[in-house]
Each structure stands twice: as C-alpha cells, then as structure tokens.
Image (cartoon, rainbow, N blue to C red; front, side, top):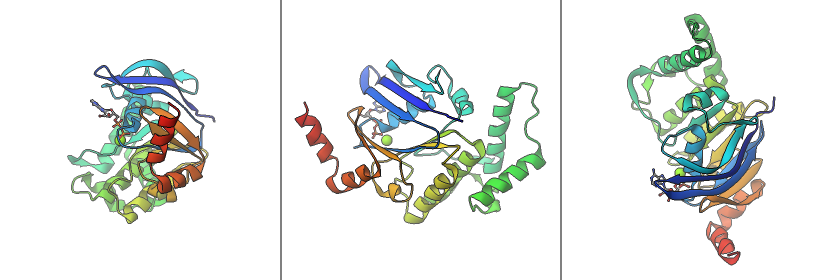
Length: 257
Ligand code: ADP
Ligand code: MG
C-alpha cells in the first residue's frame, strides 16, 4: 500500500541554465494527475529527471518515493522501485522481438534482486504474456514482432502499454503520449492506462492538449509555466485551459509579478 511520490522544491538545470525552478507535487498511490503547460515549460524535463536521465543537474530540492530519496538511485533501480516512463519517441530495436525484450527486462530485474536468479521460465513467461495481452486486448502475434520496427504510432503505444502492464509499476509517467496519435491509437493508450491505474498504480499524464484527458479522467490537473507549477485544480481546470488557452495562465502570472 501507499506508494507516494513527493517532489519538493525541485530545481533542475541543463548546462547551467535553470529549467525547473521549485516544483512541488505529490502523487499518492492510485491517483491520476495531469501535468499540462505550454511547450518549453519544463514538463519533459520533470519526466526525465524522475526517470533518472543523467543529463540533468539537480541544484536543489528532493524527490521521495515512499519517503526514500529517488534521486540517488540509478535509472534501473528507479524502475525496480516502481517508476515507469513511457517515452514520447520510443526507439526501434530490429532483430529483438517484443517478447524477447520484455523477457530480458523481467530477467534483469530478477537478477538485480537476486544474483543467483535464473530468470523467469519460458512457460511462466508465456503465461504472464498471455494474461497481460488478453487483459489489454492485444493480439498474441504482436509479441513476436521486432520491437517498434515498422510499428504505426498506435502500435508503438500499444507496445509501451504492454511493457507497462508487464513491469507493473507503482507510478507510470506518460510524456505527451497523445501527440500525433489518431483517435483509435489514443483510445488504446487511454484504455490501457485506465485498466492499470487505480488501487495499484498512480499515473502522471503529461500533455500539452486536453484531448487525452477526455479518455483518461484525471483526479488533479496541474499547470506548469516557466519551470513552476502555477495552477492546480480538478479535471475542470483542463477544460478551462482548452477554452482559454495558456495565454490566460501567462496573463495571470504577469499580473501577479
Ligand atoms: P516541455 O516538455 O514542457 O515542452 P522541456 O522540458 O522539453 O519542456 O523544455 C524546457 C526547457 O528546457 C526549454 O527551454 C528547452 O529548450 C530546455 N531544454 C530541454 N532539454 C534541453 C537540453 N537537453 N539542452 C538544453 N536545453 C534543454
Ligand atoms: Mg515535452
């Protein structure tokens, strides 16, 4: 129970240029938060920092997962602690099937926990894949395809959602998973997230547009602007942004100095 992510006064720079300037955000287990904001406001920077991307310099603040510092962990340790990041642009790996890739991911995790582990057995892995693919209504043949090679936008997202289901994270971060997706692909992502979120998994859905939030209902919506969260509210805040645009946020920030 109770995976809580706490981001406190987080300051992050890239090449001495401050990008995040004091971000505060708490996501409790099972909650869905949407992080919105204009391009360049720092949304992806936050996602990358949470996933452990090495290019960013944390100059102040802290990130806690269940009270333990996340920032000291390597990216693979964060994954084992329960953080999953769905990439905006996933890479292709020709020659490696999706099933192979997932089996290796599971084995790497098992070996990290216990160096003597022989990894997941083939029958056990088959059972797990079948269960997850049935749960997500994914055709079994999909697992035999080379990872992301020639995948449509929708298939790439389906592969990410399957990875998410197999790795069973406690907090999933989806960075602009909606950009460039047609409505059917968007539904695949939303259905997958909706099925997995809830008691076990919290979600941080990062998006410039309100559209995906018609399908994934957030409990909370936050607006990032120039590296800070400047507004927080319920699902209605996203609708307000859809109508008023980000100019409303800009104007309000300027008025407040
Ligand atoms: P968003 O995802 O909200 O569009 P980003 O986090 O991608 O915003 O970018 C925030 C700011 O950080 C932008 O001004 C961007 O130019 C800058 N930035 C992001 N990544 C890098 C990088 N690797 N090197 C230099 N500047 C970067
Ligand atoms: Mg971005």
